[in-house]
Every structure is written in structure tokens, then in C-alpha cells.
Length: 393
Image 1 (tube, one colour):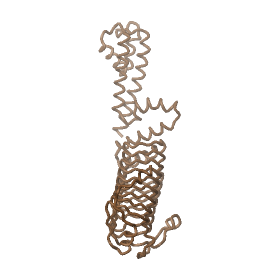
Image 2 (cartoon, rainbow, N blue to C red):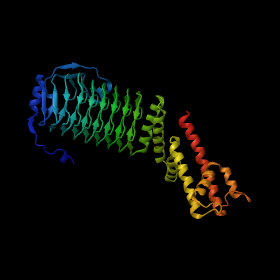
Image 3 (tube, rainbow, N blue to C red):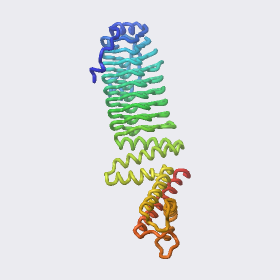
Image 4 (cartoon, one colour):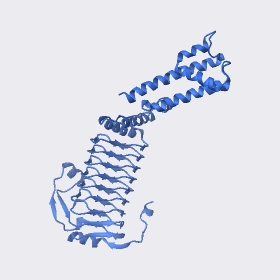
């Protein structure tokens, strides 16, 4: 797979030293559809420094210095192949940064960097080796829309003051957003996470969207804080039921806090579905049929009434096929009797009391009618309880 990703795209070759020389002089770096040969390593450059306050965690965990290199160049390397190591760690970007559509073939390091007066545009980019953006700070937007991470993606302890766009991205390795701060809206909609995902302890100050995502392994949102009006996992797929349960519970709590009861009901259903999947099979499958499929965990009254109608019709067809009564001649007569039995359990007396003027059912069908009466009462009571819960709370 990696050989296919690193195939030659027939681009014009540019030595990395040419780009580094421009950065050192503060000249604009603007390249499109080129192949950069060699390492882009700013640690070898003589760049001005600025003092920066680092936390103990940044110093002890990542070995970051309390000085940061200042890059005054515009950097636009778009739709290009970067063949060597890309090291922009502990750098402060004062001007535009655009790597959109580029392929990074070796290790990428933006650890401890700051995008001061610019957005960080990595949309449509591909990282073939590990990508390290830990402890970085984006003062504007962090745009990774449609990006692809083949191995590990590390954004832990990052602070993003603008919007975050990872929509339609693909993460093939582990993803780490441990203790990140997202100060504006976050969009991961349509993304695929094929490795483990960690958002443990992260802070989401505005809305967060994870709709239509695919989580193939464990996803950890424990200790995350969601302060926005909306948290969405709509139509997302979780392979790990525990991760689904916890994520949907958080979304339910956020929506209930903000008064959106209808959407909260959707996540309550998904949470209960995840809990069911964790139970033994002899509990899991009966619960799926009765509580989930028919009752919809109390959040789908239309589904319940539809099943009630299906069951009434099924019993009517059973009576009609077996000609269970000599007092009924048409399917409509059987349907009318089945409906009355399901709605009013007392109606069953008309077929089991001697001398009754009701339908004269064959004795062996009387037991079937009694079962329908019990089942119909159960469904009717369930519908009333579900309706009251959904529309009158």
C-alpha cells in the first residue's frame, strides 16, 4: 500500500535547500505541483526567536523549549510531493500557511508550533507517515477537510481558536486529540476512523459534529466537555458498542440540557441499542424484537402503532385461512373481530361464553384469540406510555 502511495507523479523536482533558503531570508515560498527533494528542516536555519510561555506538561511531555522560531515567509506548497522529513516544530508562522493537496511522504512535525495570524490549510493533504501536531496552536481555522492520515495522527494538547474542519477525512492509524481545546465549531462529519480514537479530556466550547462517521475501533470521549448547543453523531457507525453507548449518552445529555427533546430521544435509542449489544445472546435477541423493533425503546410511537396494526391483520388472516368461525364469512368479518379483540379485551367473552351472540369460534381458535387479546392489551398500554413520554414531558 505504501509503495502505491509513494508512486512518482511526474512532478518537477525542487531541492529542499532552495525552500529553506527562502524561509531564512523571509522571502515568499510559493510552489504548486512540484516534487520537493530533501528534508524541510527549519531546525538547521538561523531564524529569529521569541520567548513563549510553556506549560509544565508541554515541557516535560514533549521537551519543548521556551523559545520559538519566527517564520516571516508566506508558505504555499500546494498539490506537491514532499519526499523528505518535514520539520516545522516549534515555529511561529506570521503569514499564510497553505499545504493543501500535498502529499507528505515522510514524518511530519509541527509539534509546539503556532499559526499566529493565519489559518492552517492542510485540506486534501495526505500524510503517509506519522503526523505530529501536538501542543500546536491555531489562532485561525484549522482546515484538514478531506485529508488522509495513513499512520498515527497526533493533535494532543492542541489549542484551536478558530473553526476546525476534518470533514470527509480518513484516519487509518491511531488518532489522539487528548486534552485539546476547540474554541469554535468542530466538524468531523463523514470521516472514517480505522484506528483507536482519543478525545479524552478535550474541551468543545461550541457545536461539534461527528455525523456520518465510521468508528472501526474503540473511541474515547471520557472526561470530554461539550459546552455548545449541539453534539451530533447522527447516522454514525460504531463497531465498539461501549464507545457507541458513551458517545450517544453525551450527545443525549447535551441536547436535553438545551431543550431539544426530539433529538435527545434519537440518542437515547442509540444508547439503548448499544447497551443491548453488550448483553448475552439469550437476552440480546429477544430484547431486539420486543423492546427495540416493536416498542422502539419508548421513543417511536408511530412504529409501535404500525406494529399493532400489522399484528391485528396477521391474526385476522390466520383466522380467515383456517375458517376458525362459522359466524364469519368474509375476510372483513375476521378483520373486524381481530380489531375488536386487540382493542377491547373484554370482547373475548363473546366467543368463549356459551350462548353468546358473537362469533362462534372453533375451540382451538379461542386460545389464539386469547393470546391476541393479551398481546393487543400489552401493545396498547405500551403505545399510551410511549405517547405520554414523548409528547407530554
